[in-house]
Image 1 (spheres, one colour):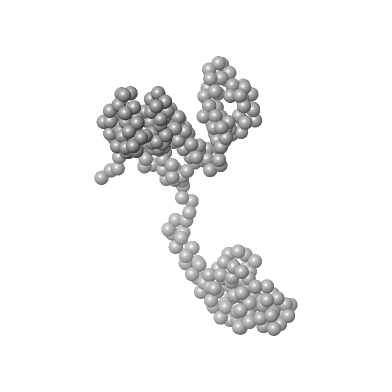
Image 2: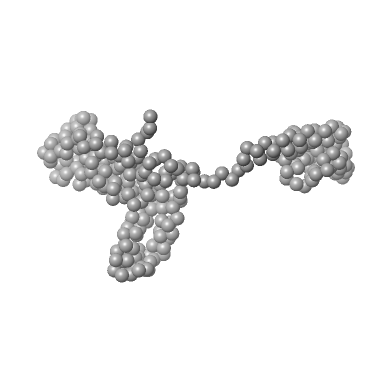
Length: 292
């Protein structure tokens, strides 16, 4: 069974919310009073469901911000429910006139949170810039200003030119999630377009065989060492936290210099057993570490 696409899911959602009647002013007032005075949850539900289609309409205003429309609608619905909770029917205006501000606020907060890991729009001025800058730039372009300057945009928005420049840079460099969809089918992801530059199965097998051979050779080389030499190699080369020469000396009651000499002799023996072994190379010490 194929899952519905994003477009199909949205169509199903729209079909469902169309079933809820829009309330007339008198009925809306009565329901709002019932909820405010008595906490009637059924009244609150009817107030929410009757305005769901307005949330969708508002969500379409933000579709150019490259966020999923369904996610915007969900955030807007949360804003609508919050508005119903705060709504005072005795003020004399309709619920949607009050709720639109909460709906927009939740949608805008979601867009800003989704835009970048770096916080933007944390002040009222920055939020204004984030949502108004592109509109102002388009208006300037329509006035035959092919390349409007930041100074002109700053004057229209009543902010500093440096603030306009900073927001332009932030808007232009949006984070991209590898789990984001390429289009509205909800199936194709950006991560699917990445080229796998890793080794193929044949190369992995060859690498595994080479490592197994190195392990056997290292095991044979270590068998040729005496107890002190083996201890020094294991605790100086074959560990992520190597001991100092002084610590080695203290262990065997010898001087630091003598410990260095034993280490040198031990490495010579290992080198003879492994002609390609280089104690200074990361790969050599890494292969030795596999034996610890």
